[in-house]
Structures are given as C-alpha cells and as structure tokens.
Length: 173
Image 1 (cartoon, rainbow, N blue to C red):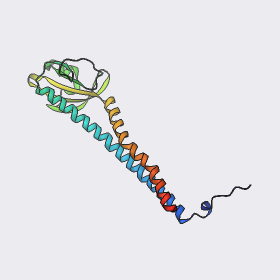
Image 2 (image 1 turned 90 degrees about the vertical axis):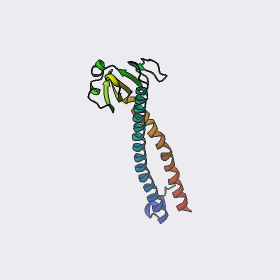
Image 3 (image 1 turned 90 degrees about the horizontal axis):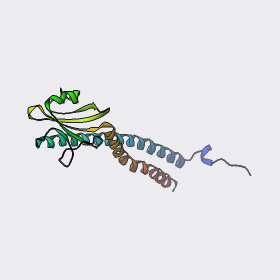
Image 4 (image 1 turned 120 degrees about the vertical axis):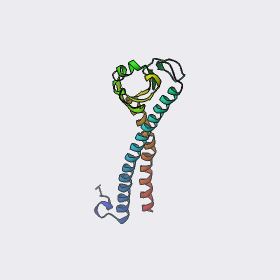
C-alpha cells in the first residue's frame, strides 16, 4: 500500500487557495478585532469603576457624615478587604493617612498607597477640612475589568471556527 499525497498539495485548486486565504484572513482579522474589543472593554470597565467611586464619594459627602469608615448600608464599618471602602477623614489626619491626597483638588480621582496596597481613590472635600475618600484596591479593579473584557471576547473567539468552516463549506460546493 502506497501513501498518496493530497492532490491539492502539488497543484492547489482555486477552491483550495480561496479557502486557505479566506480562512487566514478571517483568523488574522478576527484576532485583531478580538484584541481591540478586549482592550476597549477593559478600559470601559475601569472607567465605569472610576465613575462609581466618584459617585459614592459625592453621595457620602452630600450626607455630611461623621469622621470614620463607612459601609454601603450607611453605618460605620471597618473591614478593609471590602470591595469599596469609604472614609471621612478629619482635617489633621488627611495628610497623615493618605499623603498623596493632601495636595489634590476638592474633587479628584487618583492612586494612593495604604495598608501595603495600591488603591484607586476618589475624593470630595467637605467643610472644615474634612475629606470623603472612596477607594478600591487596584488589584481587584484589574480583576473585575479583566473578567468583563474576557466576557466580551469569548463570543467573538467562538465565532472564528464557525466562519472558517462556513467559508470552506461554501467554496467547496
């Protein structure tokens, strides 16, 4: 028994060349689109989280709260591993607790280091030098944004084999 080479290897037909070129273009174009979609979704998730931090700081500031760490239910809370931590800092402790925030404007968004972690921080100034600080660990933010970006990417990646198979099937008919 002798092995025969596939006829399209020695003399590829127009159908085979079209199928191969179409499949390659779909894969290359799809990969570029997937990278673009992933990046856009990742950055959008970060922008959404920034907006939430700013809104939380503004809402807490509107209630003119007492100094301390506040939980979403409106009461004092001190678990720093929560997804979002809201604090109202008194004038003397603002610079001492978050040195990077002492020079920020009345309403700002930035990065600060505290408790050995990097935090995304939204601030809102209150009367008498108090400062509302809403913060979220950047590690957690990146994880959330990464999951959101992957959720937009998976349907696109699942479509590639279907498109390649469809093109090959149409060209062979």
